[in-house]
Image 1 (spheres, rainbow, N blue to C red):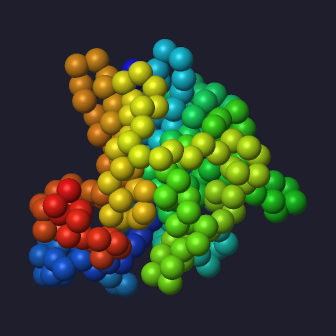
Image 2 (cartoon, rainbow, N blue to C red):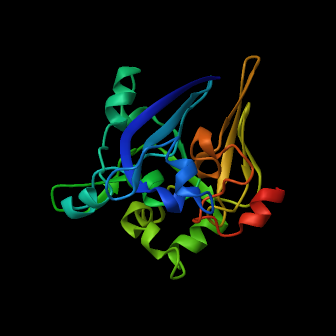
Length: 231
C-alpha cells in the first residue's frame, strides 16, 4: 500500500473547546488564537492505494454550506479534488470512502450540490463505510452534538445504496483496518495502515494536533474523556 495526505484546506475552531481543561495561558503558546479565540486546523484526508483499490479516508468540509457558515469557521476548503488531481486521480477513481466519523469537517466533502441545489455524491463510483454507532448518533444527535452534523453530508449515501455500516474493529483491505475509539463521537474510529515496513495511524479527532499527545490534553468535545484517557 502507498499513503498520501491530501488537504481539503483549513478552518477555525474555538481553541478552548479543542484544548479542554488545558489553560489558555498554556495552549496559546503552542497555537496562537485569533481575536475570536479561534485556532486554525487542517482539514486533512488520507489516500491509501492498494493493489486493488483507491481508499479515501475522510473528505474534509466540502463546499455546500452557505457563506455565513464559512465565515463563522473561517473555512478555507474545497481543495480535496484538486489534491487528488495532483496525484493523477479524479473523483471517479475512488473505490471506497472510509469515514472516521460524521462531523461536518470530516464528511462535508462526501456530497456536493448539483445545479438544482440537491446534494449528490462527490465520489460516484465509491462505497462509503462508517461505524453503525456513529451513523445512529448522527441521525439522532443529542443537544450537545447536533451542531456538528448536517444530514445532507451523509443521508444521500444511504439513499443511493452506497452506505456500508461497520460494527466494531474491521479489516477493510489487505494491510488496512479500523479500530473503534469512541470518545470524540460515538463510533469514532481510527484507520491503521501497513505500508511496507511502516505502520501508519490516521487518528482523526482522537488526537487532532501534535499538541494533544500529552495524555491530559483531551478536548471538551470528547463525550467520555476519562474513558478516552484510560483507553
